[in-house]
Length: 121
Image (cartoon, rainbow, N blue to C red):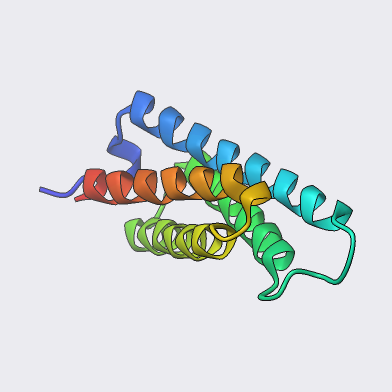
C-alpha cells in the first residue's frame, strides 16, 4: 500500500528537508568559491549547475513543506527531478577539489531522495 505525502512520518520529512537545505547551502557556497577563482570560468558550467541545484532543492523543500492536498505524482516528479540534478551536480563537481564538499552534499541529497521515494511506495 502506497502512502501519500500527508501520511509520511514527520521525522522522515524533517530529515529529508534538512538534507535539501544542506545541499542548497553547499551549492550556494560552491557558487561563491567558483566566482572567486581567478581565470576563466570553469568548463561545463559548474557555477550555473550549482545555482540550479540549490534552486531545485529549495523548490523541492517548498513543495514538501506545503503537504496539504499534495498530488503524490507531483511530489514524486519533484523529488525525482531533485535527485537527477543533484547527481549531475555531484559528478560535475567531483573533478574540482574546491567543490568536494558540494559534491558530497549532492550525493547525500540524491541518496535521501531515493530513500524518500521508497517511503512514498
